[in-house]
Length: 629
Image 1 (spheres, rainbow, N blue to C red):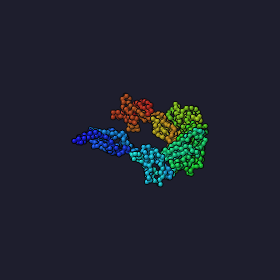
Image 2 (spheres, rainbow, N blue to C red):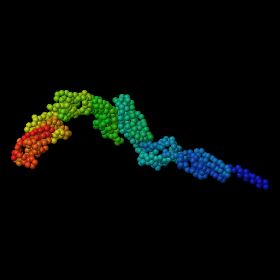
Image 3 (cartoon, helix red, strand yellow):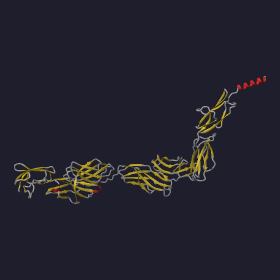
Image 4 (cartoon, rainbow, N blue to C red):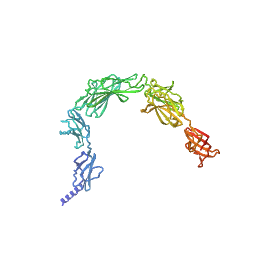
């Protein structure tokens, strides 16, 4: 009985003191996103009523034993274990490390003999695996290692891939580049040399060349090493300073070096040009240093190019030339010069460009006299003269000689209107000009527009006379007599042979009352250049002739006057008692000798006429005539 009681007491004691204890492990604690982990319960608690896990702070407790992390970061896991009324928990802070897997950064550099150098500046991963892409073994290198070199058997393009690896984790990203192994180093492509500053001690030269990021470039100046730079894969400008570009010539070579200790040097025919310009009378003299020819490859020299004010001005094909005289200059004009030498090679065009020199030209040579000097009557009281002169240097004044009298015009116009004239004679002009260089041209030679006059009107005919047109070149082509209407518009043109200075107009009587003429001189018909004389107007008197008798159905069937240049007309016929027998407003419509349908008696009758000429002149007349039957 006592034995039973003892056993029962022990059972209740053990049952009362059983308690929960949390414990778990994970199969992975470090890896790349997305990372899936599995946890295992290591709790000694027998038959727990609940085992649950909290994988992220944003999630509650779950009973699953697997979880996938999609975003990189550090994650804490909490486990709870319960049995009856007892419970326990454990939290592993930053227990899981989920890592990003970016493609690793690596640099490719080429070497001759088909060698490729790979350098990995990337610090993301603990180690890197290089797949050379040609079937050779994958190489592993640790973070921060030096460059790795590999030699290919051919020049065929291959893809080099680099995979990063986390240790532990054994995961990471991959990056790749396609490469084309090379047999030999490429010659550096020097595009140009520019002498920016010409000076004894402060001269400056810029070299523009293409570079490759795989190589280094060492610059040699007149055979001596000056500096070394790393290529960038772009076109760069290398500046050489503190040079004597006034007196010395500098020739440059560039040595290209690869990452494997190989090197190749360009030729040393890349030399600078320095230019000086002397200003002489009407000449700008350009001189530059003779270009060294000893190391120039055959058939590469192309030409010198002289630039003036930014534009190619002169090409020279002799490399030994070092002087050019620009005699096409204008006094006081500014000119900026530079000279370049061009070479052509398999790599492309090389240009050595000199410094730029700007000068102002001067000249003591007299400028040319005015050209195309012509004159014409412009209005009834003015004469226009015009000419052509150079636009540079600027004109400061013109001197016009008019019929022996000197007139100075301080303007730069190329024509003058001589106004307020009484054109009763021929006017002649001569012109010269002075430019801003205080140089005066010779006189152009006389020009005189035609002066037109007349001996007057006689018996329906008009005699015209005119002076010769005077022109410095005497190359005008002919005369034309123009008849003008009351608005000054030509309605008739009569060609006149050169050497003729008179014309008899025999049609004036039947033409119009006011005859207006002018002479048109053909100077250059192709360019529509003409000169005109003064306009000459000759008025003819209007006329009315009245018969003193008429015989109806006889010689004079009607009574009507005859006239010239009549614009308005009115005639009234009266008998002796003052009765109006007939009225007409048409000079062609006369009285037929009837009154109210019956024949008027023989006898004397009175007429009254009012008229106006085509020029507006008024006329009134009355008289008698005899009706005879």
